[in-house]
Every structure is written in structure tokens, then in C-alpha cells.
Image (cartoon, rainbow, N blue to C red; front, side, top):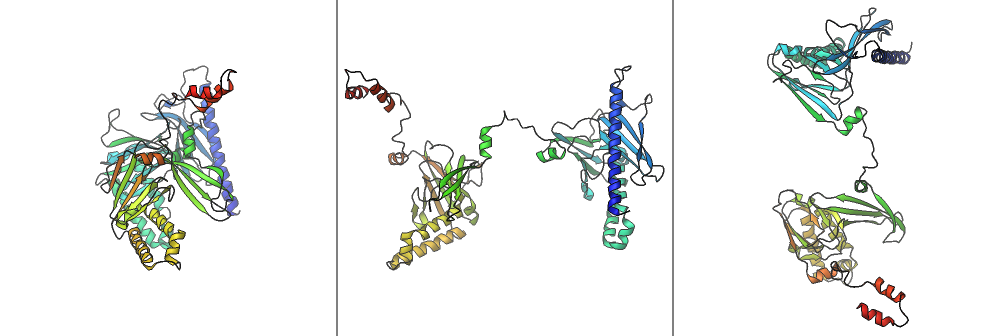
Length: 498
């Protein structure tokens, strides 16, 4: 028989066994729950000498020799743990046997469990252990880790876990000694470490972590606490819930529209500022830590390749203007995040350089990126290009601009300390604080009252935000004119309103 066909038959047999076991468990549940003569009969019973019914036995095919074997099912309750289904299989033909344990209850709501046991004596090796399919085992002292879902759930002991690990390691050892002597020697050394653990020459720790919360290590001092055993419940992550097949319910009524807006990229049609072709502009709202919410807009023209990006504050104009001074001392200071609003002016005293607001537009970048933008703006400026390369360029001016570029490149490389100042009348600019939430010794922020000229530039002088109902609006005057009496003149109505 071909190998692939044989593997398919084995897999089909195993599925058939699982189906038989599932049906048998269901029949036990149904028969006990529908027992009319004993309405108080429990489905999961304690193990004691007065147990009326033994385990349920069913014939099932052996996965090794394909002969009929015997599967036994026992629904019982383990003290200080809960309900379990114990499954045991044995085959008289080939001697194949295994046992498996499945929890009888549901998964914990949203928590897993982690056990830490300090093995300090040989008696600790006999502690009962219930290990589900989702449990992982770690022994840090020998760097042993058994991942979850690598073994079936079982009821065993600490010694049984080590013995099963040893059996798995030495099962292929004779062939490995011939094909890979170095690997065989490493495994032999590791098995010797396991033997030393079984002797308990010195205390060692075993950790069982189960995301389903259905594993258990016996507490020998129950119901008192065990000083050698600690149990910790932890909240499962989203990925761990998905491994267990637990997915959150989508409640449309409780969905926050603001959260959806923050997680969504909005698109709206616009025109390219370079070639006036129709383009799509992407807009996204995001939060800058220790600052505020901003709106990032980006556009790429498919016709001419022009790209733009702009950042605008998500809130309004602040009550006061903001002046931020950064003393750049090291090269990593150039990696600080910077939000420059379109109203913000920039100055670098060491270069005697100043750039007024509305020159670069809104930017969310790093200090290095902003300096490169300034450099590109100067190089691509038609006036500066003529001064640098045209026939009318003066040697003194050309020399000054060349020196300016050299020093600016030196600042960008982080070779020379300098001072970077941002002055924003709207108060919507920001430089990253590397020590947040503590104060940054290199960053100085001053909030000050705006001048009348700054308020005029922002259009605040024409705004009336208090007692705006005292003066009539144009709508009220229009309403009066529409209801004009024959005896009244329009000029009289306007005069009355004034």
C-alpha cells in the first residue's frame, strides 16, 4: 500500500475514534441527565469505594495495528480542581496504550493560569498534575520547554512529566548515534540532567502555564496554602483567545464613532497643486503622546508625480502662543519628533537664520527631516538658484550661501551643537520630550500672551465670542426689511437696528 494512502487511513481511523469518544460522552450525559428514577444523579461523580457505575467501555480501532482495542471513559470530579473526562485506551494485540484527560467544564472567562512549583524533595515528584492540551511546561534550570499543543492532555505527576520527556528524547537515540553522533551526545547529556532532577540533589522550579486555565498541580497542604506552590491568574491576550476559538462579539451599539474615525483613513477628491489634475487626498487622525490630536493629510498625483503632506491641529487655536527652544547637543537630538504647524516660525541663532510662518506648511517629521526640508526649500527657490548659479550672482552672496549650506549640513550631521527655536502664535507646534513625563533639560517651553498683530494675523480680532447677541446679525435686518410697513423707509429700519 502506498505511504500516502496508508497515512490517510490512519488519519481517518483517528478521526473515527474521536467521533466515537465524543458520541459516547454525549450518551453518558444524556442517560444520566434523563434518569427519572434518580433526579439528583450527578453526571460527574467523586471517586470513592461506593461508586455505583464503573467507566464506560467502547470498542475502538487501534491506530497502530488497526485491530480492535478498548477505550474507557470516566466522568469524575477531582478535589480542588473540577470536573474532568478521563479517556484511556489499550490494545491487547500490539500492546499500544495511552491515556488522555479532557476538562469537563468550559474555558475560564478571560483568564489563564500559571503554576510555579519549587521541587525541594523527592516527595514533590509525586504531586498530581493535570496538564491540558493548552499547557506549556518550563524548567528554567535545564532550559527545558514543552510548548502547548505538542502533547495531549493528561493526568500525571511531576515525575511522569520528566519520564515522558526522557522517553521522547531517547526513542530515536540508536539511529541518531549512527547518523548524528554529536547530536546524540548532546541529547545524552540532557537526559543526564533530567536524571539529576529526579534525584532532587538541590531544589529546582517547574512552571506550568495554561491559557485555558484548566491545568492543575496538587496542593499537599490543601485547604491551607502551600509555601512551595504559587498560582497566578493572568488575562489572556487577543491572540491567545483566538487560539482557543474565542472571538469577541461585535456590539454595534457600543461602538465609539470617534474610535472608528481614528482607525480609519478617509479619502476625498481634490486637485493637484502642480498640474491641477484630479487626485485623491488621504486624511488620518492620530494622537501625539503628551501633546494633542492632529490631522495628517497626504496626496500623490499619478499624472505628474507631485507629492504633498500636511499636518493640521485637530483642535482650535490655543489660549496662548508657544515658544519652544531646543538646545541640540548630540546627533540623536536630530531624531526627535517635531510637529510644525503652518503658523509656526523657525529660527537658528547660530546661522542668523529665520523662517516665518506659512513658509513650509504643516509638517510632522523629525528635526533632521525639517532641516533637510529647509535646505531643499532654499536650493529650489528660484531667487536663491539665480543667486547661486545665475550670471547675475554676486560672489559675496554666493559665498555666504555656500557657507550657510555647509554649516547647515554640519548641524544635520550632528557634529556641532546649535539652538533650534520654534515660535507658534497658535500654540499648535511640538518637539518631542525624550524624558517625558519628566522635564527635558534641553527643552524650554514658554507660553506667552499674543500681541495684537499676531491676533490680527490669526483673524482673532474680528471674532466676537462674548455677548454676540447684543448686536443684530444681517439676517435680523433682512427679516425687518421683508416685513417693512408702508409708512417706514429702509434707512429708518437700519438706523433703529444700529
